Structures are given as C-alpha cells and as structure tokens.
Length: 210
Image (cartoon, rainbow, N blue to C red):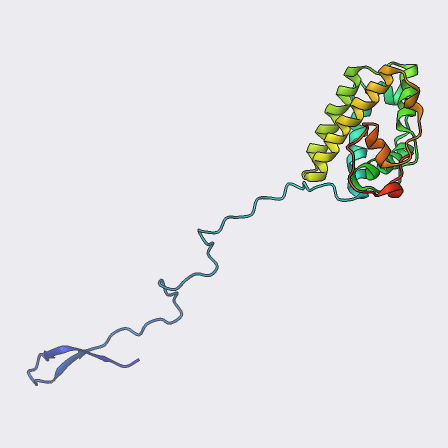
C-alpha cells in the first residue's frame, strides 16, 4: 500500500506543497476484533442436559434388564430373599423369561404369559405364609428398580400395575377361595379379577394370560 496524504499542511522547506507521511500497511492476517467469532458459544443457547441413560420401557429387551436387576436385588434382600432362594428355590436363568412373558403381556399386550400367577404364589404361601410386609418389601424393591433404570409412561404403569397385582394376590391368599387357582385365560379376565387395570375395547384373546 502506498503513502497517504495527510491534511493540507505546508512542508518544512516552505514549498507550499502538501506534506506527506507514510502510514503503516495493515496486517491483513491479524484477526478483525469487530468480526463475529463463529466458534464461540452463543450466550443465548442452553446446553442440553446430560444423558443419564434413563428412558421409558420400550420392549422385551428393556423388561429383561429391569427384571434381572430386580431379582438380583430381591435375592440379596435379607427379608424376602430367602423366600426366593430357600422356599421357591428359584432359578433366575429359568425364571427370567417367564417373568418377561408376564410383564410383556401386562404392559405391551404381548399375550406370551401361559401360567397361573395366583397358583404359584399360593404354593409358596402354603410353605411359608406371605405377609403384608413381604408384599410391601417386594413393591419397594420393584419401584426402586424401575426408578433407577427407567423413566416414562410405561415405567409408571409398571409400578402402578405391580401395586395392583400385589394387592390382588394378597387379597386372594388371605381369602383362601378356590378362585386363586382359576386359570386366567385373557388379559381382560385378569383385569376383571382386579389383578391389573382393565383394558378398553374388544381385543378379546389377543393377549392371552393363563
């Protein structure tokens, strides 16, 4: 860049011509302080919350994670653990897919459960009476396990249905009626018996539970 004329002053030797002085050539490689730094964070942007790994129960795979963790805790629990390990002598490897069938049918209308939950609990109760405290401890562990791993509408329904199921089984065992051994062939009948929430519509035997 050439010299620039500054002002309209007379030079020192009195020639009357304009006096000039050289200005430094600007460094075009230097950053312009007035330019916007696109790499800088926008102060109006809110960072997304960190992912804590929680999501809703979505499918059988999620149920398997939940149920395995629940029974791991239940087996280790000093109060109800012996019922599973000493009385029922439950093999988790064998029992896990059965319980996945049950909860998949309850929560997702899968119709995979083919057993009588009432009869199984009655058999355990005959060997060691199941008290209200046992059922309450079971519910505490279930709610904690759900909350520790999952968040959402289905997770909330899993907790609500567990409370309903526990109350119904406890009521049947206390009453000692023969209905505790009836085969429950559909999800609608399970709802009618008070084991789970009733379901709407006429889905019929689409979700079989027996």
